[in-house]
Image 1 (tube, rainbow, N blue to C red):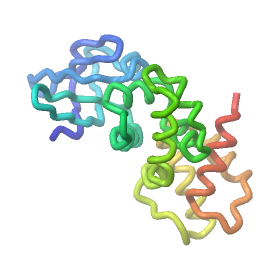
Image 2 (cartoon, helix red, strand yellow):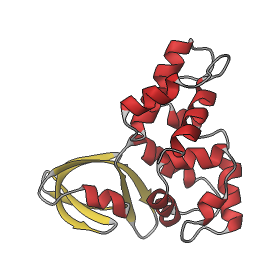
Image 3 (tube, helix red, strand yellow):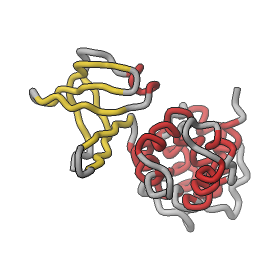
Length: 196
């Protein structure tokens, strides 16, 4: 199974790139936004999910480990295939997916092409509580001190693409007394989602 690729971008199309790794060109499906960040002739690193079917081996690439893990988790939901999973990440950032699931906001998923109301509700139901570990990386939730909890939340937010300065300011402004890292992260995402 291919888990990551580092090489030179040979072809860049909306939603698809070919990356040359030591003379072998791999075709990788990506979100249109991610494709725009990649440039032909420059080196790139992709986190990859490999889907093996009877008639094909298909690669899906992501800019971060969190995005790749959310994609993998979405595929566990009944009715969500690779195309729908990629569509979700084309419309929503990993932070927005986490926030929507945490707040049982299935409307966020119904705005994604190919996701109906029933599937959107299933995403919220089946992913509830399962994205916490993805969002905080390898940091365990629960009994950390306030300092380490805050640092873990800042690290998670930075990993999701937020600026470190904004992440630190947001976390420092939260009431974290008696809260787990997971709860602090949810509160921080709720505040940051309202940022203009």
